[in-house]
Structures are given as C-alpha cells and as structure tokens.
Length: 397
Ligand SMILES: [Zn+2]
Image (tube, rainbow, N blue to C red; front, side, top):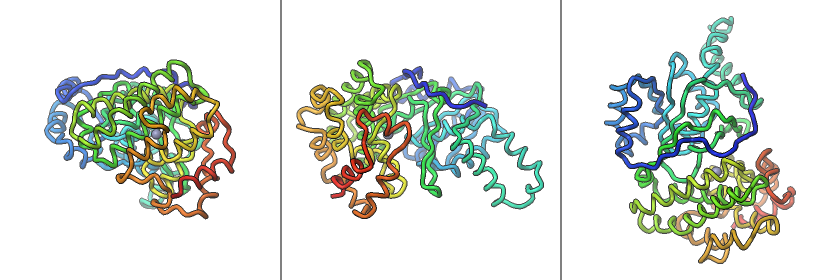
C-alpha cells in the first residue's frame, strides 16, 4: 500500500493521433492478453464498435464492463471491483469520455485490494447477513481509502485510454474524480501510476459528440488551459502549451458548432485538448474548478460548463498575477474571455446559474463549498468567501 505522491510532472503517456485503422492495430496488439474493456453499451452502439468488440472477444480474454459510468461514485467503483475480482488483467482499455477513463483509474487504484477485501468480508460472521450488509462493508472500505488518499495499484496493469470527447484531458493526467452524492463531496484519486500508459486520439470518434457535449468538453479544455496559464505552478513551457491550446479552441470550436462533421475542425479541437491536458497535468487547476464541484454535484451542471461559468470573473480577480496581454491575445478577435464564452454558448448552452435552478439564497452555501484543497490554493490570487459569493452573484443571471 502506498500513500499518494504529489509530483505530477510532465506527461509520460505515449500519445498517438490516428484514424480508425489504428483500432485494428490496437486489436492485434491485444491478442493473447487479458483485457478489461471499459466502454458503455450505448457508446459501443453509437460508435459502431460491436464488430471490434467481437474481434477483441475472439483474440483476447476480454472482460467487458458495459455499464454507464458517467460521474463515477463509490457505488460505480464497487460494481467494477466486483466484476474484476477474479480477473488478472494485463490491460484496462477505457473508451469513452473523461468519466470512463476516470473509472479505469479507479479500478487500477483498488486493483491490489480487490480480492483481499472479499476474503476479509467472507471470513467474517456477518458474511451471511445479505447484500445490504455486504455493500455497506465495501462502500465503507472504498470511502476510507478515498478519504485517506490510500490506493493499492495493480502492478503491471496498463491503462490505454481512447477518449471519445475532446476536452477532459483525463487521458493525460494522473488523477480522477469520484463523486459522493450522499455526503455531497468529491474525492480525487491522485497518483503517478494512474496516468494512462497510452492515449489513442481518434478525432473521428468525437464527431458523435452532440453540440452541448462538444461545448461542455471544449470549454473544459479551455478552462484547463487558462487555469494552467495562471496557476501558481505555471512555467514558460506550460504557458506556451496553454496559449496554443486556447488559440486553437478559439479558432475551431465555433467552426465545429457550424459544421459538426468537419473532421479537420474536430482534429484541431482534439489537439487543443491534448495541449491543455499537457499544460494542466503539470500544474493542476485553480479557482474555477474549485468552485465548480458543488455546481455539478448539487445542480447537475455539466462539468465543463460549471468550470467555464466563472472563468471571466476569476480572470478579472486574478488581474496583475498573470500576463494579461498575452492571455487576452489568445482570445482575439474577441475583446474578452466573457465575450468569447457568450458567443460560443449563445442560444445553445446557458452560463447563468438561475437556468440550472440556483437561487440567490443558495449562494452562501455554494461559496462555502468552493474551497477545494489543492485547487483554490493553487489560484494565483487568494480569494475570500466574500469574493466567491460576489463571483457567483455576477453569474446568477
Ligand atoms: Zn476539468
């Protein structure tokens, strides 16, 4: 068992941009291996992967987790751990959005204890007390590990990530978010061994992402880039990657909204996402992400929208702590970050809290939950509770 380390460094993931033919190579490379496939059944149908999955089933020993794992919780992790309990995997292959990749990291984080926990449970007297007691036992174990930041990684288990959206960056980072809707909080898994070994970027997969999802993930990528740019841990290399990422999104995301099937635009947005993923994998995020978690948990605002909502307001508070001219230049021809966001979202997705059911009187509670350790304290300017309340008031309508 290891305690987490806080040393993200730059990315050591093997990143490959490819087209659908690469899937054949991927299948061949899996031959004879033991593979856990994380891909929801609905995604498999949407992306017409049924033949590929059959090929994998023939060529390798495949355990397919086909459940939807969006915004994974302890219960989602438990479902996965139970399924892989008796399976010795070489590879966890995650195909999907950021949640699928986060879930794969969750499996790897508990790989070493998956069998041990079951043995421990069944050796106890309470083993005969039924499913509820059993579930409670394992959920408590998982929660204990998550809250104490303990993990027990699967030695020799590789993660191969194939993102189907462009923006979350999970294919390049060493952390994953696990949501606890009962306790109303979120946990962060964070360990260098959770960084995917390979990221296979197939821009054509992202064509299947509808417009709201394309905007949410595109703005998540944009926020990663902007927050990496001004993070306390920024450096010239991070800023250069971030600027290139922002410029690419500003140039091509609106093109995708006009012409969603344009593969060149989609490829550019995948590139923007990889660049921002590299940038923030070295810095982590700041105030916008810190404020966003309660908005997602309590009001179901999609992650990318919840982070972008406060981007312009946080940029205003952070003035003087970053090179304003250089950052604003990335948003040209728009005059401000806010103007760009309003243009991209206009008539498609709301950036106002009231449209998601947030009321004025909720603001102090949201502000109180906005101080996520490792995120808010990574913001270049210290924000007070009152600052966050003011930011939230500015975006309510
Ligand atoms: Zn994010």
